[in-house]
Length: 322
Image 1 (cartoon, rainbow, N blue to C red):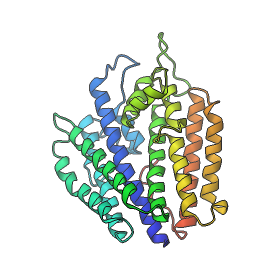
Image 2: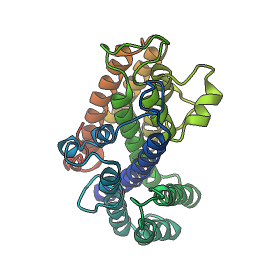
Image 3: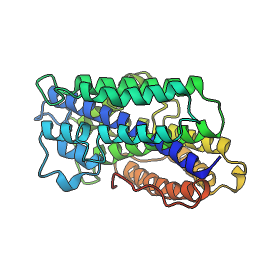
């Protein structure tokens, strides 16, 4: 496969996944804001400044930290490269350049996705909130991935598309955890609640994993328990470990010589390390150390993928700063 085509497919997957996860984050935090009891540290709370930090927009956090302004910035502001609208526009443009590789149904799905965003965005900051908009984005993203799964050959084209989507999913969930996890110096109240327990619960809702967590874990959704679930649970497809494993498996399919592939080898080492840490990571600072390690390794993998598969072209500009 031409390096240019592989690059476009990889970033098509990343942009669709970025739009979906951004919409899920907006939805989860909006619902948390509506339900929150801010005087209760165990409540479902997460500030809009924290959302901007997750999305790498700390430079504007002080100027635009209200709910409506943050929702607009991350959903419909086409001048913000982190917004849902901008991500979908890039995905549609990428799909246009590889129309002879993807199926006709996939092109219709992504083209219709962008065409319908304008109508879906009406009233996004109004009284009803962004519910209709984020529901539309989640539904259309699911349609795109479902059509891709049913209409594409399991060849290197699908592998690069899937690898991009899963790589972005791991990166987004990791960003959420790095904001929601308690700092080592944070304490608990007299009932044992961490100041970040409510934030972790909000992020669990944001990634759509609340029901999965309740089925998989008997413990209450504390910050440490939720972080462990989203980091290590291989049976939950949107966990960091499951996403990294999916990227590794996709590259194994796409690479003619996977045993000499730097990104495959690095991902395999990272997965082995995560498997070891899953049973040994301590709460709080231990999990934060894991997040930092994964983040550093994913940045290296990003460069390795570009060097090996995209003809040495520098990785696309990282739209969200860590």
